[in-house]
Image (cartoon, rainbow, N blue to C red):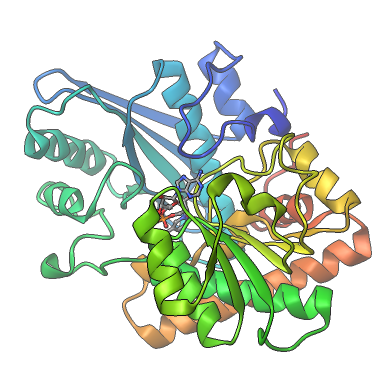
Length: 365
Ligand code: NAD
């Protein structure tokens, strides 16, 4: 299987049954060298930890906890996400490698404490090669439980000395990336009057709306959750549209901040924008859709290149250091756009090449 098909499983959507049945073939396709598995019937834990790279530091990546149609689908998700974390960290010059934990959630977790303590013991058994953090289906309270059994855990609650909610930092990085894209495509050096359509006004989307509003941008916002939309119209004067109409909004920037695979066969021809830049993971359903955006003259900023702010937040306590790391991320983005312009390779593909270069990997096609 090529990287194309590896991209096709969307974020936060149940993974389709993978085509590969051979575990080693799957691992090789994603360049993952280690897959660790723990089954603990007494706590109901069925956990997978995939380690993609420790070249730049311990493999770091969130812990996702949700139901899966099969163990193979869960492993595929862990592999894909572990590689994504490596690329994200490499691109943002962070001192960590890429890994991911996937917990196959039972219908009901009988005892959440026993469940996450068991997972903490699993992490501890890897001796620091993998460091966990919050991801979909887990929260800072779960991280506090994990921390009873291992110190290799980030994003614990503030009460337990953790860094708290990373979303504002993610939003800040996305806003800075939007500024770079606006300068590049529209030759504008500020966001005054720039029209941004935001899909999803949750943790990141809402913080992004604030960042943009403060800089004079004009906003159109959608969300499936009406309260989330309404706070954006109340606080930032955002125009609201229903979720199915967001793709048609005539805007300068479309910002996906809800879910993955939103750039797909059904949407790619509808976009009425010059730039796509948002926080959601795995926005392209397939690389083909990235090519189609390029042909349509739409600049797409690869998600993992611009959404590393959350990782920066959990890795660094010091606000000045966070700013420095965000600035580094933005410098690398500027370098990416200039290399892409010279090579004619679209940024989403050029980004993979650059991340693999940093990681000392050969590109798989
Ligand atoms: P969230 O759950 O707080 O927000 C998502 C929002 O999208 C919710 O308000 C939800 O109601 C809305 N939504 C869901 N389906 C929708 C649809 N079809 N149309 C419109 N709105 C819809 O999540 P978040 O933490 O804000 O993260 C958003 C995305 O960014 C996710 O893909 C996440 O993986 C990614 N991300 C988040 C961070 C972070 O720091 N939180 C970091 C990196 C990447």
